[in-house]
Image 1 (cartoon, rainbow, N blue to C red):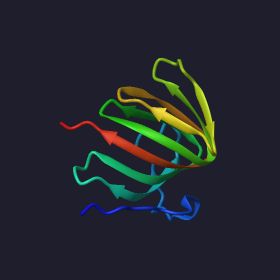
Image 2: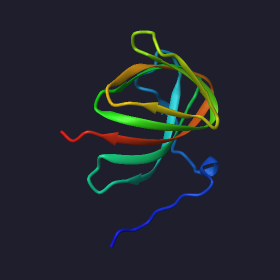
Image 3: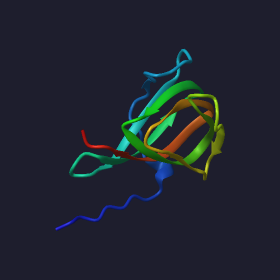
Image 4: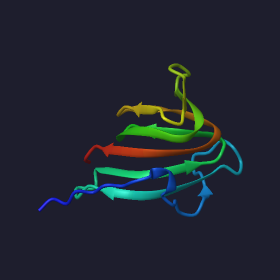
Length: 120
């Protein structure tokens, strides 16, 4: 039997301990996550992510990501400098399969993410 899952009040979900952001371009930038759900095949997962202000690189060449920004703000730009988008609480950002670029977090950001990975 397939189990249905639901999650309420995403603004109050506790994230884990903050740790240094591995791809950060800003000294001292940290992030934290709370995994909410993972598909049985391990290719789709959903969670809450928070990050402190600063810049970091991101690579979605092996997965697509859908980001519902819950609070804060950031600017996201393609690796070639085109396609700049500023997002804030309430916005939905789509990072399609193959996307690479950079985030600049302006205000401490919190998002719900859904990642669809490709099978290897």
